[in-house]
Amino acid sequence: MTSSIRKLLVANRGEIAVRIIRAAQALGIPTVAACSEADADSLAARMADEVQLIGPARADRSYLNVEALLQAARASGANAIHPGYGFLSENAAFAEAVTAAGLIFVGPQAETIRRMGDKAEARRTAAAAGVPVVPGSPGELEDLESALACAEQVGYPLLIKASAGGGGRGIRIAHDAAELAREFPVAQSEAKAAFGSAAVYLERFIRAARHIEVQILGDGQRVVHLFERECSLQRRRQKVFEEAPSPALTPAQRLALCESAVRLAEGLGYRGAGTLEYLFDAHSGEFFFIEMNTRIQVEHPVTEMITGIDLVQAMLRIAGGEPLGLQQSDIRMQGVALEMRINAEDPQRNFFPCPGTVTELAWPQGEGIRVESHLYPGYRVPPYYDSLLAKLVVHGQDRAQALARAAQALEQTRLAGMTTTMPLHRWLLADARMHAAQFDTGSLERWLAEPTTLRTVQLEEL
Image (cartoon, rainbow, N blue to C red; front, side, top):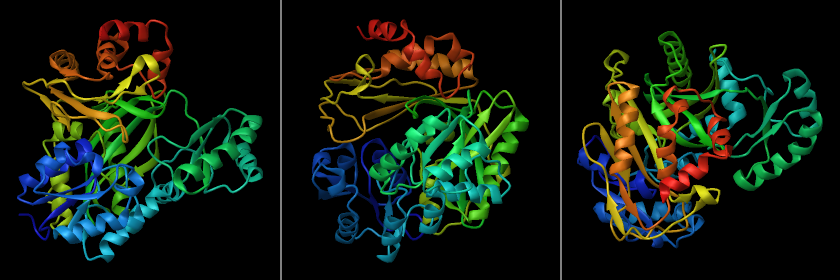
């Protein structure tokens, strides 16, 4: 058993709940699955030592119900809570409530979550640490008049971003003053509805940018990085395909990027796992900090595959009071890892969610293959939550080998009972632009708009 964590409540569901339970089991920590009624027969519920039902299917009455989660911890005797990603993972009030209840929150301190969760404040913090930020407003903007004045200084095109937003949500583009005047109040309304705050800020829109992020670990005193991930292949700002390391960076650029992330995190006294996200201009070689995720991320397995370090176990050790057991010189990068997100969505119907019952399931096996999933034969995928079914992760000595293994792994996968995005990944892996790493954050949507793309995907599905 690790340090002061005696029993762990997993305050999440799906593949990340399974992932956390496995990490805790490896450390000898008993686990409690906090499950909604819709997840009572989930794989996480079957794997955990104990199950606590926290409410009905609706997330606001279960996974977002702070008191229900705290009561589940009290009833089970758990003295630590891991929030996973999504739901309450970056909710500072939840972290405070956990600590106030005398429990261990597996993550950074509430003040850190609050500070970096406010995107405008995060920009100011980064700038104060000497980390480049995208030119934009110095803080939140309350009215259109101040937004128009700021835009004259920053220049168009601009992104209007929700200060409390995340995950690519709450963003609109303005190419001129007239469009800013139209979109600004809409962005404020959307931000209020989605995040409970109408606060927005402006940021220059960098054309043909790549989305690159740096994984860090800290114990409150010291921080190390575990290199970077490339996350540019996105649809509606939601990541679809990730890899580590980025094929776009030179060694010198990688060093500068990762060192900037460590500098910023150390200034925060960061504790736990975190990710600093950047836009990279491949033409100029410049990178700009955009935000920090104060939690474990969906794509963390690619970092684990190239470093051999279990990030979730590290989070548990740090939360339990252990010092960071790594020096930067201990962390080496080996090979290339790729992650394909397999969702219950139909690419032919604008990626409409398609939950169903798993009637056939066989995952690929072999060297360099890893599957993260909560599926099992006969499992009925609930329609109430995120559509992520699995993450198919592969590792190779180089990018060419990793791409080849990814294609082979997809061919070996058998998943029936619902429509999935696997045909899209098969198409991606057959595209020359993918093999040449010629893409940016807008590439996938442009490719999907090509008349031959979805027709090819449809033929593969048949």
